[in-house]
Length: 358
Image (tube, rainbow, N blue to C red):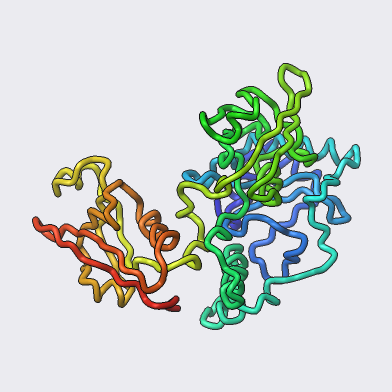
């Protein structure tokens, strides 16, 4: 859901949310221009995020977030209405978040102060700063300081990174634990109601993600939860690459991480694959547009069907195809690619530029 569509898609179409909204001072921010980044900290790759705050810029809860495979996995009218009711009760009790994970916003910092933003906006007629522009600018600045690492793309992990599936409507309810995941050793079970993580109150998927963003790669999570109305505590040990996800291809900031294929295309349907003799479940992407000079030099043409990438034949979307070299190849590397042109298959090789091409 785009930020501009929130009123039309949700508020005006849901009488309960419309009534609840009358009890809040509602502010919709459609660009990041002038926004205090020291206060409004969230996953800037997202297209929408909600904050519930008091008049002193203190937080009650966050709302938003997504899974890799679903942009609206945890956006629903039921869940939004639920958290709005909960926040009204918290406001009556003056129970703002008091965790160390909450920003204070005491040192205002706006996107326009980021050194790389000016260059990014220079070629645009519209000077609107999008959410993902903030993250891209931060990552590019780190590149200029030689402090960039690819893992910095993986911000704001979600409970899914730990193997915890959260109910989309009641967003502190565990509905599934993935076997052999970090959470599988914690004692958590489906049906548990998470109350807090490392002392941070959990009402929503976004609250959980906020804690994980502030959690080191190696450490411990102390999870307090209810099971059959009894309070319990579990300790979840973290190590390895738990912050990474299997499919980050949705992230707008990913292009900063490495080279791109320099093309656009569309995934073939099952019927189209059958027509071209491509087995179901295997890669079949038809090239519809080429913008990279390195891609043209490799010999790719519009109309080619990509059937193998770097030796891989598994099915993928065009976004996943782009993400592959961004996360696994360096500038100057060569990547083999096999295309089907008519009835013949051709083995080509893309040599990526020696550095980013704006």
